[in-house]
Length: 246
Image 1 (cartoon, rainbow, N blue to C red):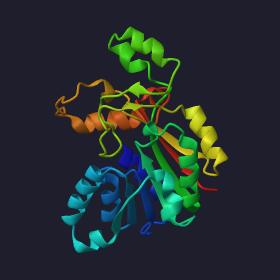
Image 2: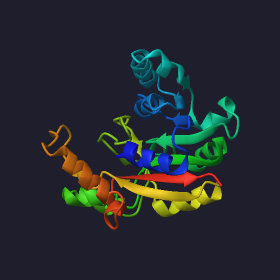
Image 3: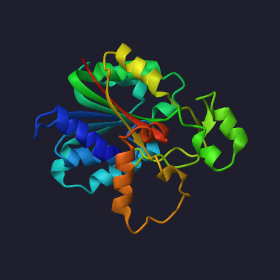
């Protein structure tokens, strides 16, 4: 879902065939970064977890030389982008499944916005703070549901994230973000919200390890439709927000 949504935003903002400069902050195992490098873009992946970097490097090593030349991997913290890169160095900045691990996300987001060239695209994938009570409520965990109405911080999370391939670091407590708050933050850092989607509207309630149904394409079509339709997208497990540098 995230890849489809991201491609929609890229194709609607940049000329067809343009080779974009992409920064993937917290790239994880490199799923999105490698996909965009295969599409012809110049991609930089920034990741601080050595295990994730090792997986990404192994995947990259199996690619043709042309793709390997278009992608570089840097070990580092997303909060230190100013140390590694010049302002305005990228056309697209991805930050997928990262904010949930950051107690104070505003400085990180401001730094990411500075990395964007004018008209550049900032893509965020976050845990939806407006829908935290839905899953425990549906499963009958009433105490957890009641708590979730009034907080977005330090809630346990044991499912895999749907951020284009990068798994949640299991065993960690994570926080969530509310759409209204992020909309205000993006406006304040000069990359106002341009579009947003819900991710995992219906499928988040599926059991871990559940088999993919035979009509998977229909399932994807339903999720894609729900992710862009109110009121369904507002109760998605994750939100995909796209801001544009003014």
